[in-house]
Image (cartoon, rainbow, N blue to C red; front, side, top):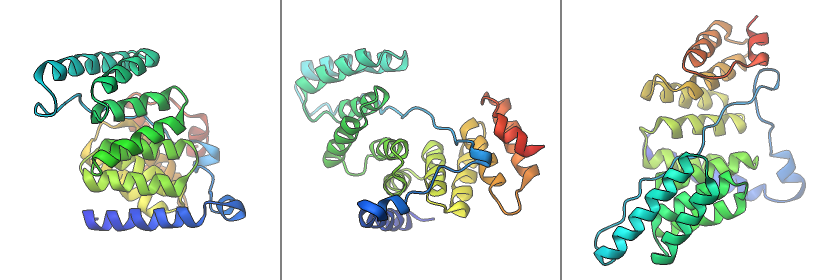
Length: 246
């Protein structure tokens, strides 16, 4: 699928989401998560953008300070110290209120702290500054997935893939979002592309196993191969999938 087509899909999905945003219509348009016997697809933590600040944006001393604090935030995030990461990114934003990496990373941090509304606000603010930021679109889509807003998640993640078609993680999430919207052929297609781009991506193999079992009839042997590969790559065993594979 070409970049233009992804943008059209995103716009179409967003228009459907807006149409189904209230009352009974929204409830009827919200499909459950799919998986064999209720197994859930997996999801990694949101990505972080590198701390890169345009040298011409601020005097050198301020840029250096912002970069140093931002790097501290990334280190704290990766170690699981999300409160420390939040503090660091807020300090960066005091120096540079429109610092794009700090806005995106703070949005990811708020999401990990359970503050999805604040995470959404920060990511949307970052997209006002740079509308083609693939990481911001992906993280926004992940928030919508968590909140069970499948059309909004599909629209956001399709934008991420449009901006970076070779991102295996974004392709994996686009497959998940398509599946949540019951577009199972599209889901499998995106997940296959994800493992083509990154053959050792355990989540994508796991999710492919899930959707292969959703076929009618189920593609059991293909599902088994992808599930076994996911296990070899470190994915946790899933009792419901193993039951479906017997």
